[in-house]
Structure formats: structure tokens, C-alpha cells
Length: 67
Image (cartoon, rainbow, N blue to C red; front, side, top):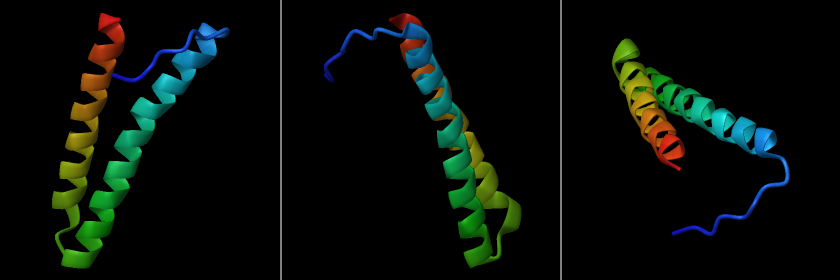
């Protein structure tokens, strides 16, 4: 389990977590778009990337909520 360091700025810590949640969706969507361009399957891989990114973000948000 990763070590948790107390933050002196909890608002900044939450902002970083929210940025990570949004960026993973964006990164997986870009990866899906790149795969679509490579394999000529335009909406398929992009939609899968977005769905996986959203699923992971919901999981991370749930973990943050449980803390």
C-alpha cells in the first residue's frame, strides 16, 4: 500500500486527484483514437477507450470517497 503523506494544502491535493481522474479519460480516448486511425475502425476503439477511462475514474473516485 502506498504511503500517505499529510498534505498542508488539502484543496490542492483534491485538485490534483480530480485532474488525474479527468486526464486518464482523455489519455485512453486518445489511445483509442490512435488505434482507430491505425486499424480503420473509427468509433470503436475510441468508445472503448472512453468507457475504460470512465470506469477507472469511477473506481478511483469511489476509493477517494471511501477515505
